[in-house]
Image (cartoon, rainbow, N blue to C red; front, top):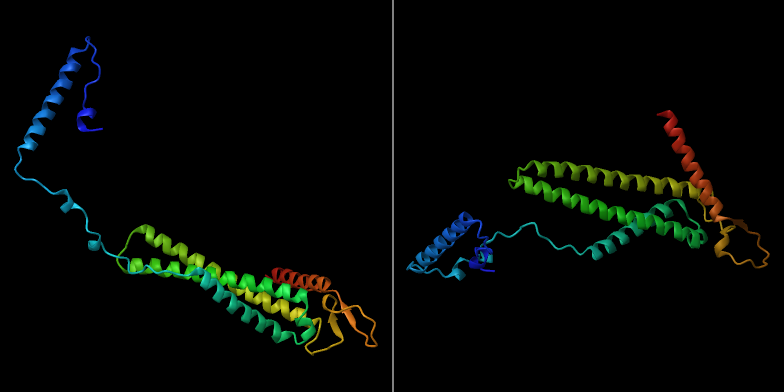
Length: 228
């Protein structure tokens, strides 16, 4: 719709002559304006007024991060870290090869790698916000965002440290029930075929073992709360 259509008078009511006069006056001034613009000798090329994208500042902080690759690296690091914790306390090869232990290990690895990713992202967010403030952005919202980013970063660090401490305590308790030596007579039910042999083995229920460890951890937490 052009300007003429916008200003086109509505169907006028004969009983409102004053309104009709006002609309005619507006249309007349518009016609005069059009004539004046046509007589202007200066002609502008609107293409010259278009913004040049090369003139805009570019973000110096823009950076592509391959999060699939990051997650892969985090998982590899977590796998090594949790393996080191477990093998510090558990020496039995049969126990290390048991399906139940492997499931417990992978659960810790998954949590560890996810916490690493959260920690990395929260740290990167905090750095970018602080760099914006250092670059001159003094808006109150920026300082509020930095405070929130700091709180998030601290929370992720705490969660990460708590997970490591929990893994250390859990696998130490786990090993205490088996001992530190490579005792072949202590085998796991899931990995031992029930065949008749001359050797006598001790069959240990892994699910029951896990319950015992979890109960010990809960008892320790209760004792700490009572002391506080």
